[in-house]
Image (cartoon, rainbow, N blue to C red; front, side, top):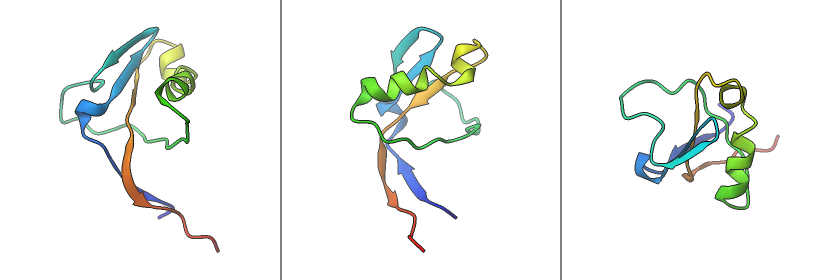
Length: 78
């Protein structure tokens, strides 16, 4: 394992689908997350700018949910 992190609750999420930004989770279901990408950004606006570059958003085939990290274990330097 490289890193393990807990996410803040779904109600802290900001979702991006195409050019539309909304508060709250991308979907309201128990579906599995397709993938997780952890980035470092100074604020939500910067994180959303990076999220807009995701192919799922650019190609209109899905969306991205941006959530703060609650805490975790950082990678150990070897």
